[in-house]
Image 1 (cartoon, rainbow, N blue to C red):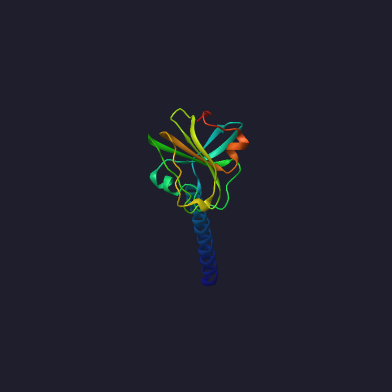
Image 2: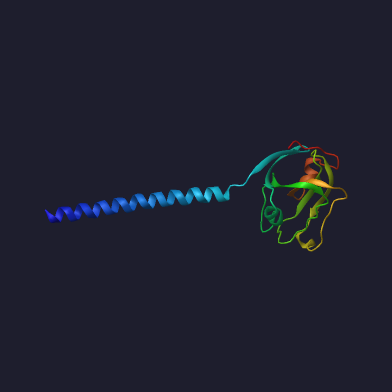
Length: 155
């Protein structure tokens, strides 16, 4: 009889260990999913629609698209600011060329610059007017979408 109890206890421990391992993996996957999800907004600019990551905090503004080696052809980033101002951008630690658009609070393009090269750092690019939003897109997006100063978007 003692031998059967030892076998049962061994199986019980293995079962508990298995359940705990599965639960830990599930929790780890859930936490990873939460931390990798980014808020996005689908925005129509000119003839194209872009899925833009939202940058709404000073920390997100500071990082932007820096450190990325690629960007989806219909992707980009939408910087949302609380107060309209002449927000300047640079290409620090950015590895891909970008088009940068400044928009007023109504979503109208008030300034833009195309094909900004990562090698342009430390040069800064600033709009002529106060902006509430800035959009960074893959280089060439402005031309391929037909976006010009005055183009409106639908946030």
